[in-house]
Length: 444
Image (cartoon, rainbow, N blue to C red; front, side, top):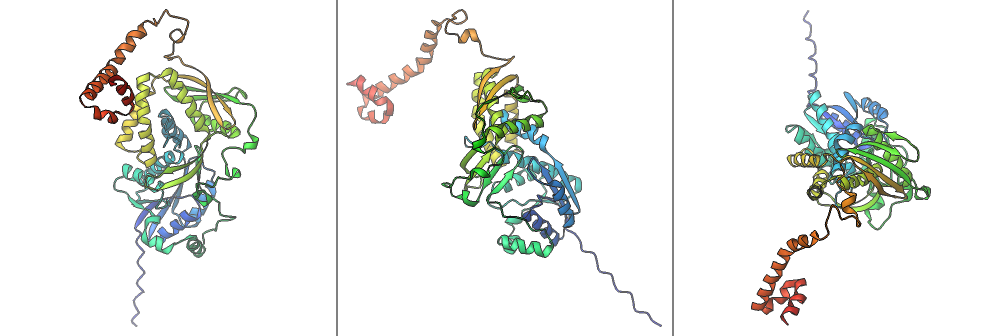
């Protein structure tokens, strides 16, 4: 009796390798999770806690139910404060004179840990759900490549196959039903929002019309205007080498010294008094103008205090140089180059400028505004005797005459050259702009 040979077992499907996906638990990243699995990747999900109001336990459970091989839920809040927010405060950083960079600072913090996980897991790729029109794709990926030059980046919203498959929200929802992904409940939020412990942003929806104001009820990190107290609250912020080391409310007596705790405490105070709102149109790195509404409560108070302590403890020429660097620092952060040679230089220079920036500042918080009202420093460069209008012991006003004459030398020389030139060629008068009337009087 000749037996038939046993059936040849099917060969196991070979995975393309591990990919670490930045996962939120929302519709987009859940669809991307399943899409990557369809593309034969083993997906490891990564949830970064930078202070946003998310249910991380639910996101972890959801990712595992959808087939993620592993889920990392990482609490990055403290390092976000110490490694990113505090250095930006040290630079007094503002993008385009208004934006405190809440999202821009969070992205390299999130991406840094994603690369650490990828290296730990031996992943061949990392992935994110940022769109192909925004700044975040740039910020994530520049960090990825700076920290892991040979990593593969999977950006589905720039992938032609993915985009052809998912042309809109309807396609995403249909795919979600097919794959057993839990559907979003309730109404779709009216705005696209990015939330972390430093700020929250609101974009899209009716905000795409710059003439349309945001609804007062939309604000989530500051209380309604109608509830802002009629009495100011005084908060004392202490610094050592430009770094906040304590925050104390004079009204409540509460004090915090831990970096994360003191920042969250400032958020609480700013929330009550409605501090930190801005509504702007900004220039994205990718070349598009974008309208955004931001709430940056605690950082607004902190920056106010930091600028003030520098005024009493920082040398004038050092301050000038640091202020020259600030717009470039903000641009580097906004554009996603936190991990770059130029930022290494910037951080070293800013750090040097902060040496001996010690002391405290009292800030009054009242109805959407904050103002420094008192300050003191053991390293103060301010002298009451020198500043006094009554005392002349330390400074002789007569010396000012020589000071003025020395500084006027170049101005006088410049004027003489202008007059000599005009005497030779009167027709050049119109080229001299604001100098013209005085020169004309001289020659008439």
